Image (cartoon, rainbow, N blue to C red; front, side):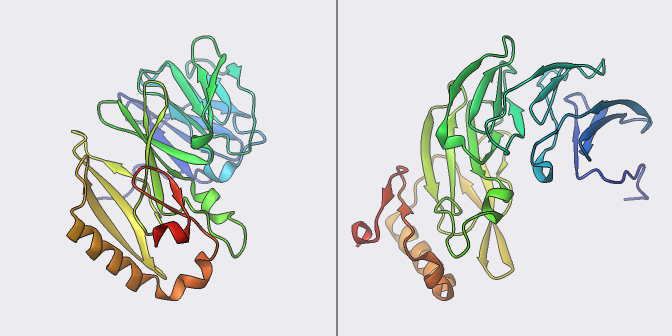
Length: 260
């Protein structure tokens, strides 16, 4: 790898359009579009993150690359004019497009990208970060980094060790899976949808990447080994988990007594 082709300051987020000919950086309450080939400035979209949590507001391209969503504002990247500004119900306003491009998801609200009308609210998506399977049929969701950091002092979110899956067609929840360790990185999805990768915390600053086969359940022996491994890692964290519920493979919250 040689020297960087382009260096841009105050740009904590960057994403390429679907055909990779342009990229957009986001920061300081504005988004700027550049040419991938030449690095030349193309256009600036000003005020797109106004009032939002700018620590985690990257812009999202539509699947066709014809639209850009940044914060709660929808843009046609060819003209410096907002097409629509969606209502904001929370500071967690960063959003994304569905794989079809017909829906826009901003936190827990799902909007029609054609009529700009609110289609439904999905509470299970609140403060979650979305990734879609390669075929666009399943959405994977995990807590946003800011949601993990803003947890009540002395009490961790019970979802810190979990990810959720949704039917990408209507965003009905499929399941909540607890991997028993804090998820600290984005979920990676293999293009054939057979495997996913998860970065989790083993305690302190030690992290690991684990690969899971989609649709395969643990054997009883594997599950016993997993619980024993997690118990060893969490011996020093027992006091932090007082009063928290666990989540089973079906997404149900179980009390400590029920686990026993």
